[in-house]
Image (cartoon, rainbow, N blue to C red; front, top):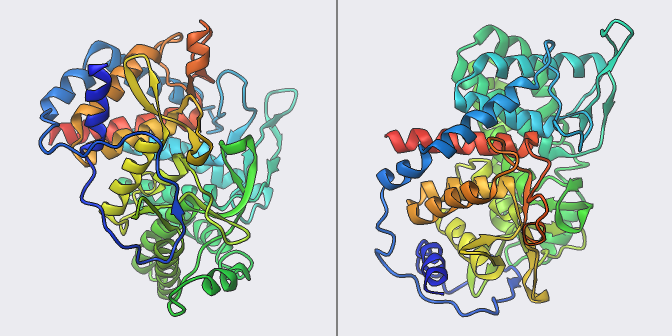
Length: 445
């Protein structure tokens, strides 16, 4: 019991003083049912050296290398890179491949990052895709050569801007000026697609503004008509945080690239749209918990906030959204901790998604959410919590070893069944590799 109390205190110590007033005119999340101890100053006395002891032990060295090797070994000679090595998901998902590119850039494998980029751009050009497709399928002929360029075009702008982010990460790191200059027109076209009135200046904006205290301002959000969510296992028509964080951040960066390439009109347009989206996030996707502003998960199509917590609330961390408010981000984590944690033996873990007012907490941990939490802990120097998350992986990220899971299921663990779903899943393994690569660099600084 004492151990559980210490673990809980280690996560709440990151909370800063609550802001008493809500300046955004937004809906308040329901308070948690559990008791909320005050943060203890100085409780986390762990250091980078303590983190390194865990991060560089035999298990984590093997997992880090194993995750990379699993991702690298699935890349075909032409660059086609399937999402799943278990067969759980057929095809090459643009979202997942984009995160693998980001992870490989961070890891230092620019050759394979470029190889995947080349394949996506070439395949989608031949398929005539004017925005990011959901899935690329590889059809082969009798001699093993591609015979067509099939794509599944589910309409998901979040993956579109994840691809733009991946391209930017590669180009800003590699100094591969020829490739980046030649492929810029393709990326510009995809970046422009969702800046039309159908998505960015949606009629829903009038509804949102009518409910707001502040009638002035240039507030825009990108609508995701088929947002792929773990929540309820379905697609949502909504204005979600992750789509808009990735869009806002990537457009801001793309404007600088366009300026460098002499595309002044595009540079100005992307900057203006990025600013509008950032204002939209700060105006419409901030709600409150216990009187404190937090980043909300999504705004559904009748203008209401969805009252819950999930990995989506952590989007500013995933997108590395530069204009995120650090205090609001900390508030978001502490609200998530207070409403949506469950006991897994000696650990307390963040649930994949919950609705606090339902008093039901889903007992599983999504792989990318765990990776984003580790990034946040590193950023906020919450080293004790980071060590606990590393220890969780060392204890339960097993069978198979040296590969990262899509999700970790508590009920399966208690029943003696495999704990991990889809081991080696491209999206989640890539987020793990991305996060640990960044953390390893920070530890050495």
